[in-house]
Length: 235
Image (cartoon, rainbow, N blue to C red; front, side):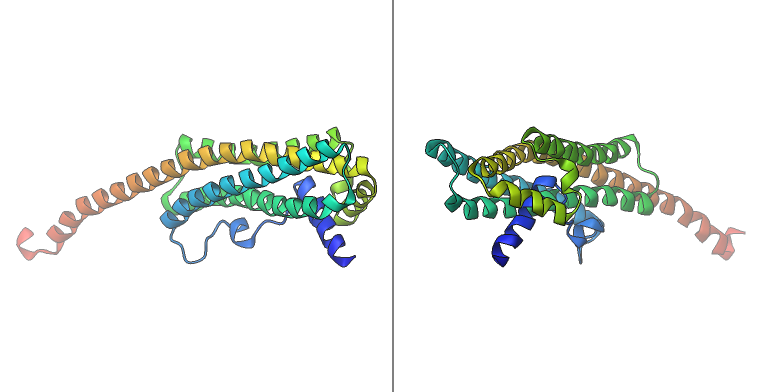
């Protein structure tokens, strides 16, 4: 019974999109990484998430097809469904965490190299919009399948709603359909996030290189003047 409760909690969080954000991602810092390394690693992470969510979506589709063939959703399939949903909750949380991390990376670039240009400002706005759109879409799916998004604001209320749904074949089918659709929209969302991060991170690397080049040129122009002032023969 305890195992089932833990699974249901994970299911509830997954469906609501309120997964916990990994601490490293939430802070926008990857331990031991320099800023350029972090920018590069963010792209690697979103590629890995993209591959993982496609596998989860395929798993949901397989379970959904089984349910259609059986014309109902027996309780025996529930452990497999809850397992897929536990993976989904992790991926939703990691994706949202990566979005926040990327936003914080823009802030770190700004702090170190000055106010970003319009390209980076637009990139940051795009990341914020992505997170808002994801929450909105998940809420819409919940409502579509009779799962009130307001009841997912706390773990306790979400658990109660999922527990109620899992007690009947119709309720279990609702949960499966919702999870299947959320996994599908996450495939599209992660592809969009991957495109944004790829373009944005390249813009950040270009901006950092440009600023560094400017600083070197300024230093080179100042050095001869300083040397002239300290050379006795110059007076």
